[in-house]
Image (tube, rainbow, N blue to C red; front, side, top):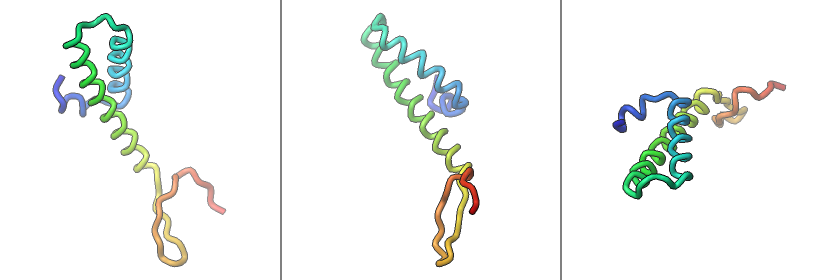
Amino acid sequence: MSENELHELSFEDALQKLEILVRELEGGRIKLDDAVNAYEKAMSLKKICEEKLKNAQLKIEKLEISANGEMKTVPLDTQED
């Protein structure tokens, strides 16, 4: 699977593939070359999952402007006073 194909995976699919690779690596029953390739792919999947989580977090934050004009982001689920 190419790097572009990995980026097109949903978060859930990428996480599932990552979990499978981790189980294979933890099992220790794969050849060294295959283990190295699996590790590299797992690191790519981990990075993709982190990026997707970060993007999701950015979508659920809102901007607030304070009385002095300073802007900041706050979680969307904070309650108004």
